[in-house]
Length: 195
Image (cartoon, rainbow, N blue to C red; front, side, top):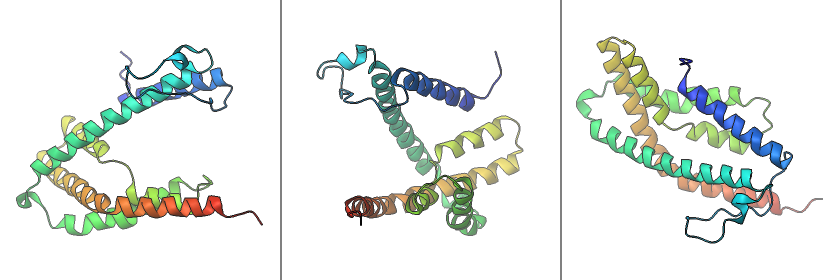
């Protein structure tokens, strides 16, 4: 009845969940919380332990959310692939997609993470991979549902699908070598002895 925005409600629920966990753990990371991979696995003592229960529940919900996200992403990628056709690709996509991926997004991420204290290598990875395309589909359908004229809707749909398709291909190819490089670099930094 509040006529609020769904994403904000989910964000607020996540903050409340984290605050409850922090309050019960005194803002320290709980030790030795075991999350079984399925209901049948092992004991569930942590689920009812007064100090570990919030962390247990948070981790279980996060794992469930990751599984749902993977399923949702797979469905969206399949739908995007099914909807793509060269007939609907516009010439603007040829220059817009690289501009967005190589210039606009890196600049946006750099500005957003100013003062975060995050290492440069992590900021570069975030600026390259960015956020998932599911949000773009949501905002596109929201705009269309709220009266976006057909001409603009068709153009925006083409651009959105082009960006998502390019992202799936380019980021899908680059994710393994880049994450391997990042892990090696992190290991080198943590194993370098203090002078």
